Amino acid sequence: MARSPGRCPVTDLTADVLVVGGGPAATWAAVKAASTGARVVLADKGYCGTSGATASAGTGVWYVPPTPEARERAMASREALGGYLADRGWMARVLEQTYESINEFAAITRYPFPVDAEGNPLRNGLQGPEYMRRMRAWVRRSGVRILDHSPVVELLVDSSGAAAGAVGHRRQEGHDYQVRAGAVVLATGGCAFLSKALGCNVNTGDGALLAAELGAEMSGMEFSNAYGIAPENTSVTKTAFYNYATFYRADGSVLEGAGSQRGRSVIARTLLTEKVYCRLDLADDAAQRAMRLAQPNFFLPFDRLGINPFTDRFAVTLLAEGTVRGTGGIRIVDEYCATTVPGLYAAGDAATREPICGGFTGGGSHNAAWAISSGGWAGLGAAAFARTVGSAHREVVHAGGAALRPTGTGSVDADEVIRAVQAEVLPYDKNYLRHGDRLRTSLDVLHSVWEGLRVSVHATGAQAPRARQAAAMVAHARWMYTSALARSETRGMAKRLDFPDQDPAQHHRITSGGLDEVWARP
Image (tube, rainbow, N blue to C red; front, side, top):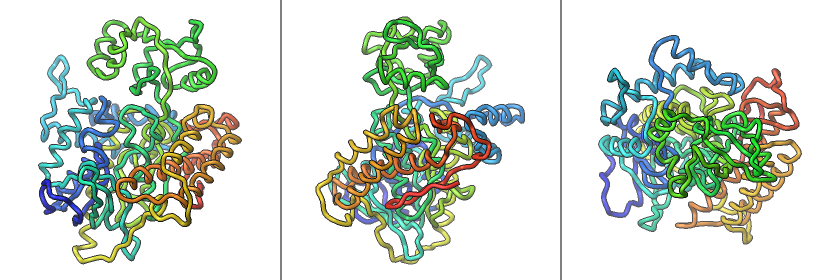
């Protein structure tokens, strides 16, 4: 087993499986890998159990009783929204695995699920802080070595091209570290471009960059223009409750067609020229009580501002959530969530969710189920791969490029890069209300930003994580827009104003990849 947690500096570790990330997918990967007897190290950018989108909020779970009728309804519920790109086989697997895993979680951690009037447990929702607190405890009891505040900055690769560990920086101890591993699971979340959406500022697409540097492919990156509704000047993007809302223009008139799910584009267009206001005036007393019980943190901003959201109008905005609520991510190629790179696995928001969502998803529900299921499968797959590699010493090299090993000289810094990419991906008229002309213009800018980064940025030590975040954000944006241009239709959340209809000839997924030269193809 790897050494137990302690206060001594950690500079060089070995493991069978390295898990990168600290949210639900990462913790499920860690406990499942450890259950096989594998030595597991988990490295988190933040503090495992408290950082990320799940830990900061409540979440629904795609937990469906194992009856044919219930499972059929669950699979059919979002197929049309997702453009019929989901896979029934994967849906069935995730539904079954989530059901088993949530029941296992309840038995092992004694999570206090509520019960109905007959005393039956209600297991289709989790309070994020308590869920992740118990997952961290389970990870520790499983013998996993947790490295908190230890962002990974690059992967290690062996002579055959297989993933062989990672190098990172321990923020609190102030030094770099290395983990040599038989296999690696990337469970780093999606990319929200530092938009300040709740819990998402650790989600900068790091895992996708790490994977691409080893040659992995992406899939579904056009399904990346997710925006969450939030009260103006706040970060809480829990959009389900806005199904109870009426939206208003600044003059008090009703904003026709606006809504939480299908009417968000109306809100985006209006916000380009004026403020939009909202009131949750469609919720009756019973719904209001249920909402406060289900998502207490949704109401914290209102309580602090002295607003009653059920009776008072309040201004709203849209915050980009990118591939945190979009479905694109690292392409997986087998039932254990392997990538196209040997020894490299992807799970949760870092992996594409197209197998179960197609081109559309929202917060929680399918996302939570995918994190649980894909995390567990990736952990088991990585542990099995590590056993085939064995304990023999492997020669490894560092795989990182952009922001670590510049190709020239210059004066661009990471913060300049971040501002430049945000200017192309946060505005509604560029990313949400997509049009081919604007996509091409933004993509030209992003290619130029990447070239400047690639030539000029050289970060080491404590500066490396921030610089690598910047590189990951630019790479993510370029895959997004290249894929969006390759889908000349509207399907799922990949809407094109210049191609507003769904094209039956484009009923396919789009893969993408590359760094210095980006590509996308069916």
